[in-house]
Length: 288
Image (cartoon, rainbow, N blue to C red):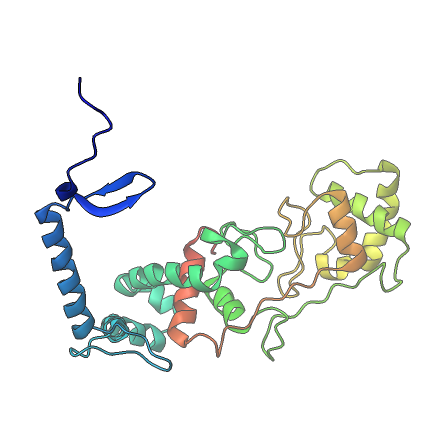
């Protein structure tokens, strides 16, 4: 019977022993060691050739003088130079002429999609579908008009943006400013619901709400509630609502008003970019 308590041959250990436990000497395979040595040499060579060791204020730039920043800058310059031919032509033309030119139109749509994602999708969502408080740009319902010229002007100067040429509209805060009491605001809301063929919350309010609407609202929204694009007054007879079309939301709009702001992009974006955005937004499906 083999004696299991026999200690290993001292030649097969490192000589380290603790509490009767000895550390065996099992060297790594040669191929593993050689591979490790190669990676060490490679890392040293790479650190000498390329930017590597950081310092307090800068870093070792490498003997080749290569930086990824320079490479990216060069790539961006090449891309900008390639686009400049088209962008310069778009800058010199009106948006209608850009649309009429197949080559420029395709370039404007492709570039406009990227520009929209960078500058507009944060509010109007991807594809311009809109969300509460921000209008959809993909339907045919426009506060200020959906022609190419109308869209370009809105992008260029904004809405209530503070620019001298901005689109301006101001709906009164009928409850907050003491123009109507709460019960009259509710009556107008009930009547407005009927304009789009929906049931009012309180049918008894409709007749009074109609009279109040005639006295306070038709100047902007029209006798039939169809709206007025020159004033940015929305059509109340459809079922397209920026802030919600339920009775509570409508009453809130009447009581407190809604005065959303779109920034003026002139001065922030160049001429070609503004025109490309106008062409792209017009193509989303709601352009006139």
